[in-house]
Image 1 (cartoon, rainbow, N blue to C red):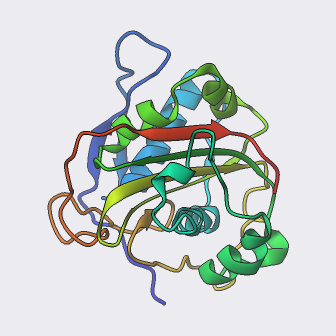
Image 2: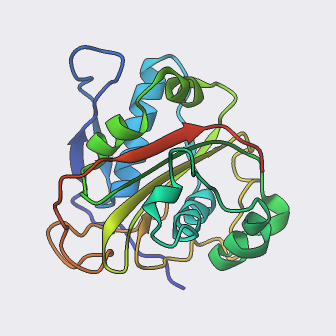
Length: 227
């Protein structure tokens, strides 16, 4: 599969800081992809806290998208007393093969941020919803975390919308390695690191149609776990 090339006229976004009373004015050139934008926001806040940037790993990001899809649109399974997560065995048996990731290069998943809502929001707003307490900040700023993969998708062409960020302590270029060297682009949904223009707000949507705007509660959870 040929890799989709990014547009020449990359967009600029304003990245907020959760630690500062005013926004951290940082601009980044990005593809038109909300998952890439979310990674940029996370990295801006991480470096502002004197931690190094995450390496954006497309193999891990593709797995993050499959991780979302394993919830089958069940928003209630994301947080609260009935919170669930896909079995660890799914990483090697299902997610990695689907993404073309060499299963022998899987590294431990050392952190996760996951949210679900019926209203699509911009990546900077998703950041504020996902990173909402001290525990989330500890995971974000942990210097042992080295790689990141982010994904966002709607279900059945619309709401609810899931955001997922997976973190790992793997070594760059030797973990979550793509067998063909190219990330497998799959729809619906967007994932980071693939040089893939994947925006749906102003044109053809990777989520199936234009955004559904409905004001409801946002369910989010962030924690660390092992593969």
